[in-house]
Image (cartoon, rainbow, N blue to C red; front, side, top):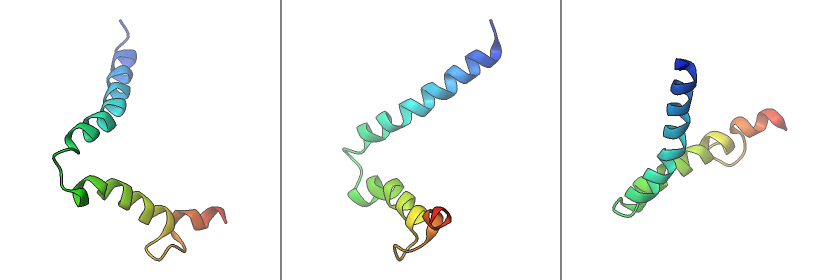
Length: 59
């Protein structure tokens, strides 16, 4: 069996499993901890002031 296919399959299983796991443990996490990845993504995309960040690169 090709090791590349097995490794790639494990990577995608972990990639798909992380949001499911995050949702399951989110029930017991405080709201600030649960929302941190969403906040971080929005700050990187839009910048802290809402004008800038990565989205500025595309106009």
